[in-house]
Amino acid sequence: MDRPIPWWLRAIFVLVAAQALLLVAVFFQATLVSLLVPWPASPLNARFIASLYTALGIGVLMCSFSRTFREVRIVLFGIGFATGLLFLLTLYRMFLYPGELDRFPFIWMLFYIVDPLLVAFSFWRLGGKDTAARGTNPLTPLWIVQAGIFGIVGLLLLLFPGVGVAIWPWRMTEPLSQLYSAFFLTLAIGNALAIRESYWEGVRWLTFILALLGLMVLVVSLVDFQRFKPGISTVIWFAFFSFEFLVFSALFLVGRRVQPTLKGEPV
Image (cartoon, rainbow, N blue to C red):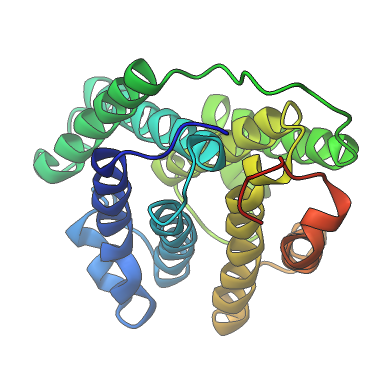
């Protein structure tokens, strides 16, 4: 059986989830996004940011109730990657565009320097190598496609934010393009790591996060539909997140029948 989750790792998950779920209020009052996010955002951008943080925050919170380290490794690595990248991106923009922010984002920077350190400590203590025998992963094609889509979009938003702004289905800014890139690249990494997971336990919470994210993005997109640009990018947007919601909701419900579970592990 895999290593049980120690109390301190559960506490880390609760701490990270609490940070993310601060933005739940943004669904009801978009201007509250400024309490955490240092860049200005329109109502639709604010609610999209809230959907990203809320879906990931709820998924992270669910990880705190897991029994074994195998169940949470992908999500834990994603926390470290996302927060570390956001920290570096913020430093980059502060250095390159010194007048972009009205004030130093102290809370934002504090969160995103502490969180990667906590993740690094967790992997140092618990290790990252899976000792279980690998089997065939029937979901490999799905994870490859997912990793490719999120990775390509994430790199485009990160490296070519001007292009990202031009093709995005609603109005956004270059700082937000790079902010979104951190989440898309994190999802790409998570899906890529899922390729190596032979057992359902290792991808359960990633599947949950993808399904919930699809649902929340669809809801906020429909609420602010009048802000979308007419064109193919809007069609692709709704088609893709509908796919995410439907496919990963179904997979979350029947995944243990599709992908094997480890003997003795929770199902």
